[in-house]
Image (cartoon, rainbow, N blue to C red; front, side, top):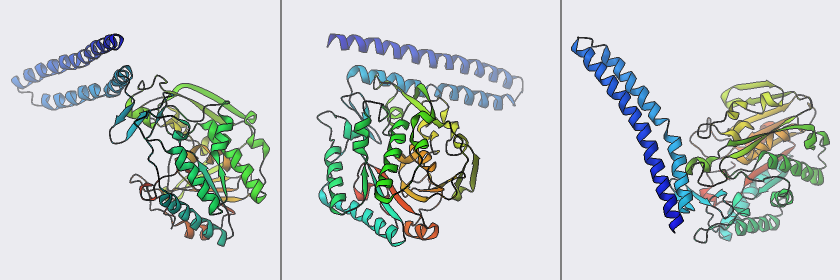
Length: 402
């Protein structure tokens, strides 16, 4: 207890020192500008007032730029106090491993059956239109983490019940929990400061997906594109602060910011990426089309580095592989976990249509009707890739396929 008290005293002194420095500096600048304004008005120079307003805005904006630094300072305080849970608009939990996760409530069998029933509907529609169907079951990060005793974490129970119900309903699926478990000793599967899996996990998940398609439906794929040795892998240390880290500050966990790997093909690629709703088309190599390199800027609180792959979330995105025009056409209905899967999958197809059914206000365009879109494009395969399993009513509409 004495050690904690010493730490808190040091922290409080540090905070007071920073605030005094920031606001003292700003006050001195404002004081100087105010004296200039008074002198200008005294001599009839009214235009000085507009200059003064602009100066105040500039000084205030500079002061606000310290907002992110103060979040980080507060995160150190929380860490020293041993804070494990922060509740704001969302809840962030520090797992026993020091990784940041959600709380997960237990779903009853009726809720899980309702979710599986919706998946069964899209399977039936796919098959009735000549497309083979596969569900990609992705465990949430909490599946691998231990929460504080006072925090619900039913991720394992929910996921296992979900898999059992998929079996009972005879829905073709691939269970990524096994894939991730097999690779845990080789690379980090999830980011510490974010809920998403890493780019390396996305690469491994794509390979497992291709093997499952081949096993079930004789889908032929290129081994060149599944071999990590045929890719350039560049690691960017302490580069990415995920959505949970942004909520609680970089040092809420001593893991700090995450490393980020950029994985790009060494072999020749020729791609086209289209966002029809936005009338946007990009042509070029893998890195110029299905990657959005502007997101690689290192800025913990403004950049979303994870969105380097696929560019983030869109209503509809199409990736064309111009080197494989006679390849298969796939429709992928997905959440954000597929951002680091879709670019690698696109190397094995002629067309990869990526559809997001979730309800978010920031999305451009109306939600697609999956049945109508399947009839329109006649895909060879329909894949649904969702992370975790959530209550049907609280899933942001992602199971509302029609």
